[in-house]
Image (tube, rainbow, N blue to C red; front, side, top):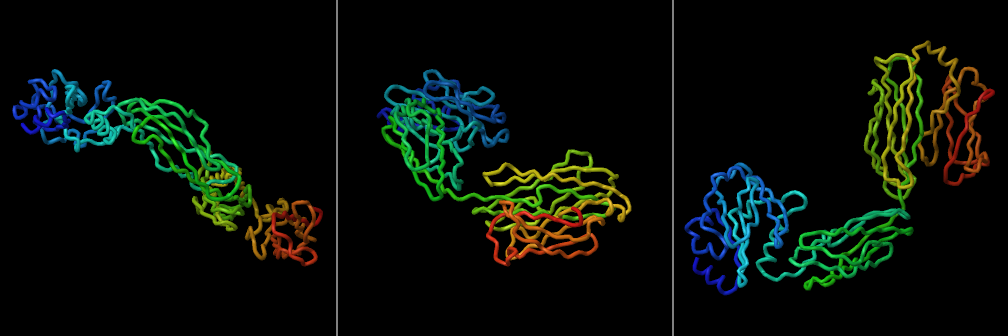
Length: 445
């Protein structure tokens, strides 16, 4: 104890924590910590749950959790002060620590163990508290700039789309931090906020950094912050980003309609394709606001599709227990194609428990779709015909300019048919890659 007194008398600083700091064993040290003579073991220690800082000019308010809560198994003193200043109390208003500045030395006394604390709420951390302790004990009231990230990485970005990240600047010092300049370098990186501002001790300032470019490639930059922190007059944060061509989602079909004439389970296929240059990520959700939810199911709700790839989604229609009528739902597809919003695929199921033959008589010609899509080297187009339009059935292929590229002969089995396109034109020359449309013709339709 005498060694501590000699150390303090030499103008040094001491942080002391102990469960018996207010008892007779520390009587000689009390004046050096600004303590009174009435500090006693606390019989309410079992109620400690949080530790809260008193608002002072030296220490700003914060709160920390007490790791042991109501299960603390040792007594923790309530401290009494005369010349010192209370620093922290528990939720029962019992003072647990304080600080004292004699003019020649500085001390902090705590009847709680710092190791028994945990980070509190609202970004109050043990590191922040200990930083305030050390700044006070060292006795050098300087600003101390700290940033939330040493590097800001925007990760994968797409051309002509803006991205932003936040950088938090904190002042862990005891004096006001004066930022006098903020300079950003590197193609594509931007900062449009204030370049001069102040941050008082234990406060924060948030900077928003943006990135946008139209050219693919890897990008590097720097954000330089100039301030009056004597230890770090210029703080540099590294910036990075990679710009790639985006994924492009394509769905076939864009709407689904099915008529069911029996209570048997029916199935269909929906194809999601990625015709872009980057991996496509999709999340699928079936939404049905009616009281009959559950008649439509999909076999996949999360997809990863590589460039030029596709995935088949199995649609299952279960009419069991439903009456004749029309039922509507939507398949919502969330994706990372920046050129489109989420895709919404309307689904309509019509139940008509009539004679199958009568149903076929009243049906119209109907294209079911082609598979695979995209394709290489060929794709098969499926369709159904009404009984009035079976004659002279054919499929015609058109390009985006509306020019006919190929007329396909079809194979019929009753009212169901199909045709296969090998990607050539009417001259049997390969058609250029791209998007094509097809039209079903039969009889007078």
